[in-house]
Length: 247
Image (cartoon, rainbow, N blue to C red; front, side):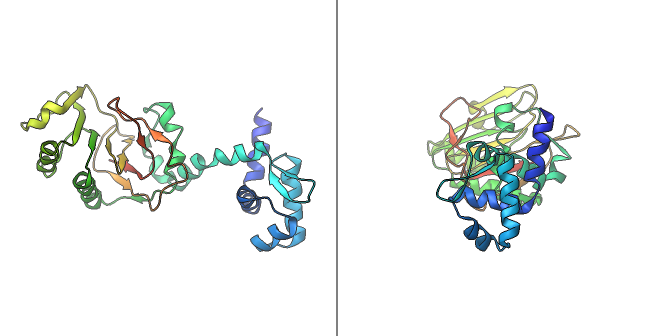
């Protein structure tokens, strides 16, 4: 079984073959069209197509056009996770994701269109903006509430915005916001969800939660229709516009 996996990964390790597969993901194409579109010689394109055909990732149809097989399309579907973690490998060398449910860690690829932000000031400014722009709900899990955010949240509650929070049992808050909180012994991740945007953080390998690195998506991903099940048990929230949030 590992031999089959290694064969697949070897074929996908070629940028040229990956470009061909991604091009065929958009539409069926003839050899000459693929060659012209990708700027490769016909001979080179033919060689790569033959390799992809040999491992059944692509197929040549009766009309002469090439297309992805169902197997090839499925292989492409699993690549965003690997692409995302490889793009952010320095981040994931220092952060723990195995302490979150598999159904979430298995969807990291949906954050592929995100960009990682390492400036704590910009991150906090972004959180402030997200809170101010929320009009329906604010769901949060964290180890504290910034003093600057308390008046914003209090106003949102007065405006009937649904605020719910999960915080550690040793968290103390004098604001009436405490009536909207639930408590856990430990907090291993931070989550902020509104109807417009969301942020999630992963624990540093030291076990500490500090100021976050966040990623703010540059555009809605193609997986935006999928849902990120919220922490409060209410309706799901769209996964598009999800920001990666490292503390």
